[in-house]
Length: 205
Image (cartoon, rainbow, N blue to C red; front, side, top):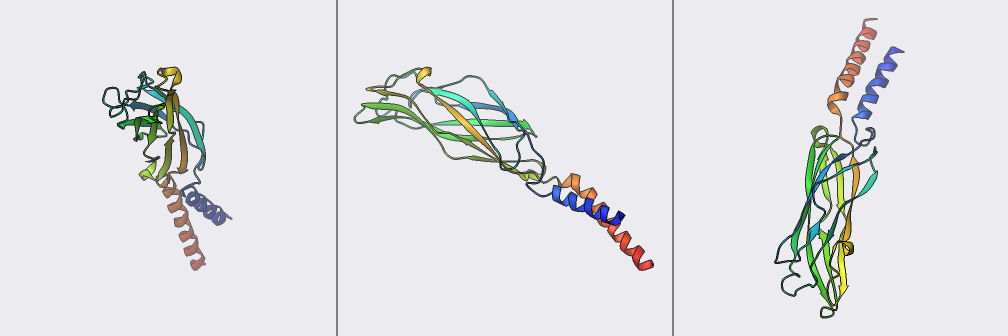
């Protein structure tokens, strides 16, 4: 009976050490946006100051979406040869929960003209999702995806100002749970040791 219990405990320890079996996790931290604020290129504005975020408890496979910042331009026209030059933009994420880790999502902003300047707008596109590692040995994985945006669309010029801007959202996807090997290893080794001791007792009998 005792042998069965120890075997069960050892199996449980191994199961807890496998990705995707760990309990729910809450992610939280801060972020900061860096964008083009001077000519050449479309001069854009973003919400000032660092922002913060906190998710509810997420299980592996869950997603959580939240607004990151608002972007706009105060310019009244996309100047050919200047504002239609792509400029870099980035968002740096610094996580404090469940532990300290982070990274940056990069992209570009540009002014667009169509039909000889009849239709104009600012456009924001991201290079792609950001995959981050966290937890014991960096075995946990999550993905951050930022939404592209079109802002300050206008006819024969731009509709300048914050009210014609766009809100940029992010989706956090909890992909893989970290492997808690340091916590599970003592229980696993203890279970194996007891199995060995039980085997020796049987031989002696």
